[in-house]
Length: 209
Image (cartoon, rainbow, N blue to C red; front, top):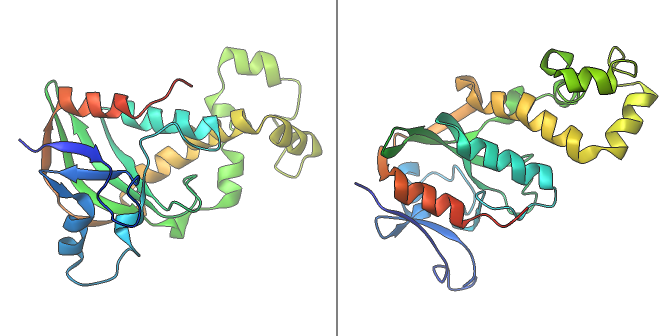
């Protein structure tokens, strides 16, 4: 059984930097082996761990929690520290949970070739296929049958960005991550963790939000 931890004091120039450590080795050291000398990802040791509530937007923190709650999904684990909002480089693991174990079957990075800003904008409050009864009651007589050029929609987008962003993350970003053609796998890692230890680590990353 593999052991996963998050530790600091790993990088001499950034002693507070959080790093995944698996079986006593920083995860970025495994990357070096898997890349076989190729520069597939720039400075993998300095990617930020996604398991946190410390996002600029609460909606992104809630989205990360949503991903981590799934029983079998491609889940973000690391991201570019400069943007850190799921818009740039994201490294994901194919995570599968059983009653007492958690598997990381593969690790790769999200390929944004097929990503479309217009598709993402249509996946928020304009995506009526995902509406609840409450949504219909709230939006049914507003802009729901208009398009992204609607001034009413643009005003809503601006004034209710947290809600709109979360809808887009659930309706567009998450499904995008699950499509095989949108992930460039670079490792069949085969890590196997105890579920209790894994869930405890995940929960330790959360603040109260």
